[in-house]
Length: 211
Image 1 (tube, rainbow, N blue to C red):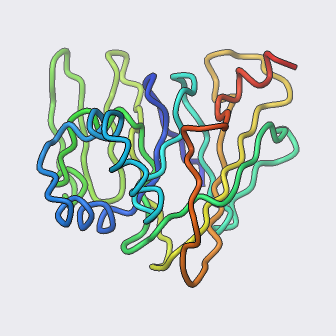
Image 2 (cartoon, rainbow, N blue to C red):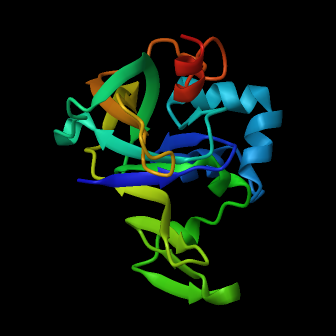
């Protein structure tokens, strides 16, 4: 499946909606500005990593990324090279997983992810679409831009591996030249946790520039 996500300057994140909303309810978190909370409240953020609630991949370039799930037999072909790989991030899945532009959490609205499909038109005729499978909008020139996509992964506790890829030959800078593959390995229970905001470099182009 050709799946893409466009990011702002905040990065990507992965989570299971029911897992996330259950955590928010338990912790009595009512604010819609979840990204600000997750950035400022280190105790809550680390608890989320321990319990497998929400995994961010911060400080990556704001471009379009190809997204693949190894559990769904999705692989990058020989036109791509692997640039990075990290594993061992806790993730509890209850109702599949969402892969999102982290900017979606600037003002989070759960209802937009529960919809059977609703479309609205904004300024300059730009269309916004929200559903329980994907969220996207169109740019002024009519290009469809995906901000959130859902993937069907069975319920369970997992350790997540992230791999970053780059096209071996980048000819068109406006094309999709970078991508991430995610793999989930099911386990019985979490033992410790990793903090994705420390000692990890998820920025593919930055790694390539440093070579």
